[in-house]
Image 1: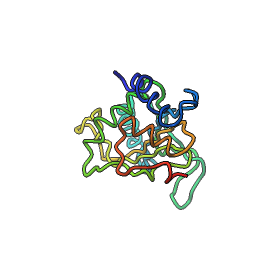
Image 2: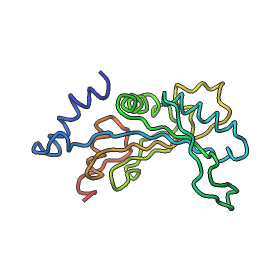
Image 3: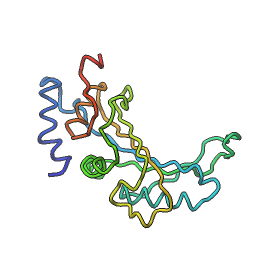
Image 4: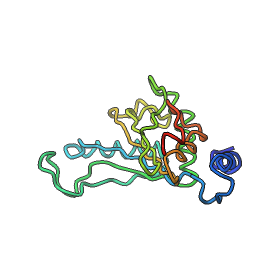
Length: 187
């Protein structure tokens, strides 16, 4: 059973019990999208590095990433407006659930010295942000094909009314948290 089906059949009823039976199903927290972002600052000097990053991100996500460009010139960083500096991809629906399940069950256990995520990674809207230091923790990446180790950012967008609801949703989806979050701590 996939994560989306498990959300519909098991997680959603549990959330309704904990957050209030009188709330509608549509007001329950759910995943909206997952955005993967890989910054390649050195792309201003060597354009091939960006091609490698795009290849790695497309293997990780199963989708073709878009190249992100600088919005303004910055003399301190020696970059000009419109230069490519990274790539990103947004996952929704089935791919989002598949990626999340793969990340939690396969990638997280492979990380060195991983003890779980801090609940301080939530923003005020309940979105959760993760930084991965090495792209090689993903099983889709072949170690012999990479040019260099580079990290990526993962932003998990959740439709929650507060941080506690987002925490509850992600913990029920087996996201490994280092510490617990209670309703009183958020209020």
